[in-house]
Length: 485
Ligand code: ADP
Image 1 (cartoon, rainbow, N blue to C red):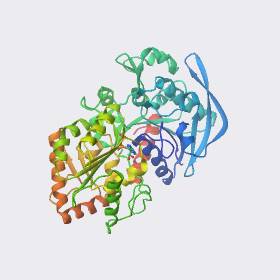
Image 2: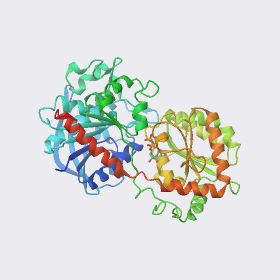
Image 3: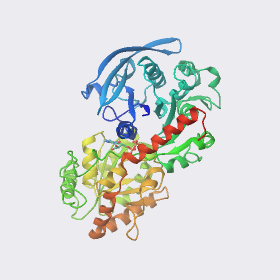
Image 4: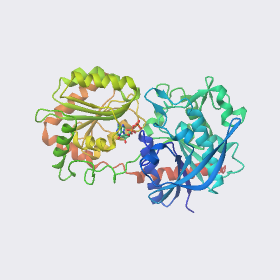
């Protein structure tokens, strides 16, 4: 019988997005549906969803969500994503805001309340709508309480529903003051170091890890890394304890969206067998950023959340050396204010060679993927990383640090092998040296074109990942039923 799967996420393309989580939550369902599963989606009704003009309507269903001593109402609205039902929880007090979680000044003060409301409201809505999920697939800290609700308060209502919890980034744990635990309405005896407590604080990601039947991370490399002190951000111990139920599933890519042959957002289309259009795309990006490069100089792209994780400290330290090379660089990103200021300052210092745009702009992201020669991701850690995978398809050769999903997807170029350039040491010197190698290979037009063709051939489509999730959903159900695996 077809599995009934509910995917719950705090962001989802095309409705609302801050990063890769939205790509995964919006694209995986399409691949699961193709495999014959019945998929239903849940997310908050943000201002952004309405502002973008998506068709969403009230279902007439309202649920009461207890929040400590208060009870608040959630309206259930409905839209659709390529034939898949999408339920939105509406409460303007929480979600009719400019940002999803964080303003440039910092996190919203009531994020705990907002996401308890969302998590508990989703479980209430599942029962109110009479949905009978085999699996609830939760993502990141914003939904980390759902597995706990399913194993405790809502177990009588949904005894045969298993949960799978995906960690997209372990550094974001949803940590809140202990005295707010009562807002969750969960049994007091799960607030201890074996449960939701983390060094005197409430930890929502930990809740997802402990109470779900299966835990996944978004690459195999990252599933190993998070079990170590260097990458586990303090949760390595409980992940080691759950290692039998912990799996890595690499994110896929939607090639109907990220494909230079069909992309309508780029200046000219091109393909593996005819790369000519790429030159027009490069010209377009250079114009967009008002850069002038010497003929034959490569253009390096960066599209990123501006956060510590992404390796900007070593990039900044390497900048002088990089800007001394014959190349140009374009940056597109938003995030922490200190990086906004830093990049603005750098673009002033290297006018004509370094272009910076501090904004979130999907069309420009496509143009950069198409118009650059190389794509740089010097991440300190990277759970999966999507841009390097998009870059491969656009023949824009990734230069990455060997960590997590970057390490899993990119093989270092050498002797005709490889699909990109990869350095291991987290240092400005290693970064600059690898860019130098890439620039040297770039000068050999024939070798570069061969490398581009090889990169463009790499296939990370969702089908393979969706099949793996299907296996793991079945494993979660087997486990819930207490059967042998
Ligand atoms: P993360 O999830 O850590 O932000 P990923 O590489 O997994 O990193 O995914 C980032 C996604 O967000 C990609 O689809 C990328 O194109 C997009 N993105 C990030 N910053 C911007 C931006 N400033 N403008 C447009 N798209 C962006």
